[in-house]
Image (cartoon, rainbow, N blue to C red; front, side):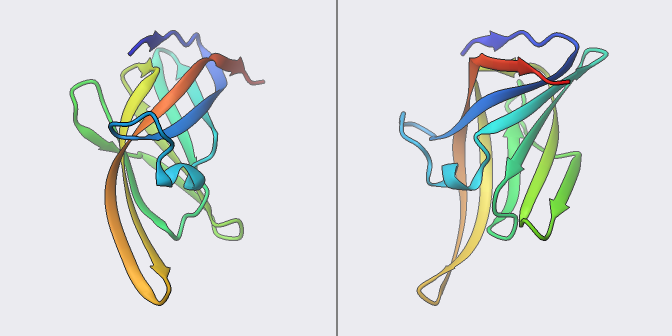
Length: 131
């Protein structure tokens, strides 16, 4: 796991949702945007992740450096698009962050609920400053 240096400002970065213990995409990958936003304001880092199906994804947390699950401090729901931006305060950005996702869906008339741990993989090469 490598630390990604983020200068002051706002950046876009490519993100992949991978299975917890395998280098394969998680089933949750289709529910997360492939790009995230990182903001560094006065030394404080924020990570903004867009959930592409706000109704299915009922909860989302990321793990901080101490291994604690942290919840978003800000959530922006777009009901029309069924998306939700979740903003987390993070200690540092690394190439891999553990996340936990709770979901609820109906499949063939059956209600399915789950709580899964995944890995968010950030592509350092894709880090791009936004205006």
